[in-house]
Each structure stands twice: as structure tokens, then as C-alpha cells.
Length: 347
Image (cartoon, rainbow, N blue to C red):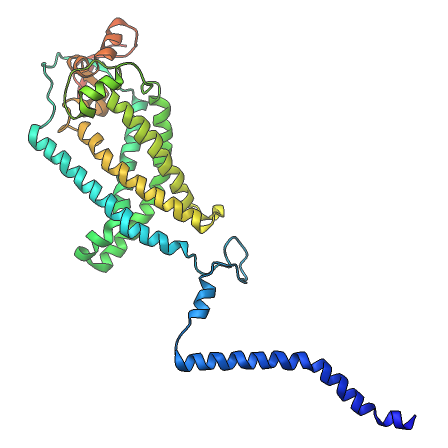
């Protein structure tokens, strides 16, 4: 018994050695890894490639702030978005707007405004009601503000920054951002209202395609009888107001309210779609503005500004609608004088 008791320290040491063996192996691996890292720093100083590979992996890591993607430090898709936006979307959209504006300037220089073929009769017809004009001008004014502020944020650093400098450009960009964010909901409300009040006029009917072909989309002034809206106006209503207006509204909401808990890739896709469609709509809207201005089609602006058009103008540009009004099929208000100062005769 005494002999066995005398050997217990050796047995205890043997047990402790077996228990410590895994720790010693781990410590050896850690020391080996430390030696490898130390050697890398000597051979390749400041080489943080292993760290950045882990950061850029897109895998969720630990963070004290809980939420979707809060554990992802870098979204690698963002670099793809930056390259796509700066190398493709911004240049193409910018030059598209410039080229389209130059084409319209050339069109005006070559022929001037589309004049009425007959003299004004002095008899007026109400073409647009107050609610219709309010819906149109709400969309028009808000869109112009969004277009200007959007262009500042999109191409301002290429066009304005070299001219006005960093301080003024920084102030202008911040103003454009706030203006853009708060004008967007006004534009969306106007789009919905305008769709509601004008959709009954924009339904396709026989003759719309013929009008588009003979007038080449509105570039020439060929007399083709049409209703309240011609083929070109209907195409702009469905393609510009409905399709592009809704796309811009939805994508804008995604970017305006990140607290909806959408992931960053969703906001990046929304930004790409928003920028591309906005550039297309800004360019095409120049044609709509041109045709609706005093330098485009004579009498068109007065109709939307004051609500009245001369009977001669109505017969030349919207003959089928004019015939429905004269036959009593469409009820509207008549007046005398000029669209700027109508003297209402009867309702």
C-alpha cells in the first residue's frame, strides 16, 4: 500500500500530460500561424489581403446592431453598381437629353412653330376643366423640379463642379436632394390624379395609328381627324405618364424609405432603374414640352393654360372631338373672344 501511495505523483503527472496534449497542439498551431503572419509582414509588409477577402466575402459577421445585412461590412454589388452608373447610365442619359434638345432646336430652326391654317373665329370651346388643368400642371411643375434636381445629382459633378467649385456645388447638391425627396410625393399624387381624369380620353380608337404614321409621331402637321387626344398624345399618356411615371414613383419610394427594411441590393437595383428611366423620360418629355409650348404648336399652350381653344383650332387639330361638341354628344362650355380672356356665353 505504501509503495502504491508513493507512485501517485507520477500517475497524476501522466494524467495531466494527457489532458494538456490538445492544448499544446493548439498552441503550437497558433504559434505556427503567428510565425506565418510574422513572416508575411516581413516579406509583404501591409498586405491585408486575407482580412479584406473575409470582409468582401459578403458573409454575415457579428454586430451589436441587429437587422438585415447589418453584419455585412461591404456590399460588393455596390462596386458593380458604381461602375455601371458612372460608365454607362449617366453618360448615356446625359448625352441622350443633350442630343434630343439639339434635334428639337434644329426642328424649330428649320420650320418654326406649327401655325393655324385658318384665322381664329372668335368662338371658343372649353377643352380642359379646372381639375384637368390642375392635375396636368401639378405633374408638369413637379416633374420639372425633379428633373432639374435629379440632373444636379446625376451629372452635376461633371458639368457644374468644375465651374462653380466644391463649396457652392456641395450646397446646391444638398438642396437638390431635399427638393427631390419632398417633390417626389407631389409628383406621384399628380400622376394618379392625371391618370384618373384623362384615362377616358386616352383609350385607343380607330385612326390613332393612321395619325401617328401620317404625322410621323407629331413631327409634321398632316391633317388627320382625331378625337380629344391624338395618337401621339395617347402614346405619351400610356408610355410616359402611366408606365414611366409609375416606375419612377415605385423605385423612388424604395430609395426614399430605407426603413422599409429592404436589402441594399434591392435599393441598388431601384437606383439603376430609376436613373435609366428618368433619363429616358426627361429626354422624351422635351418633345412633349416643345409641342405644347408657343414655339411648338400654335394655340396648344393657351388651351392648357386657360382651358379654352378657338373653334378653328379645335377643327384643325381634333376634328372628331370638335364634331362631337357641335352635335351635342359632348357637353362643354362655349365662350367668345380669345383663350386668354374668354367671355362665357352659356354652359
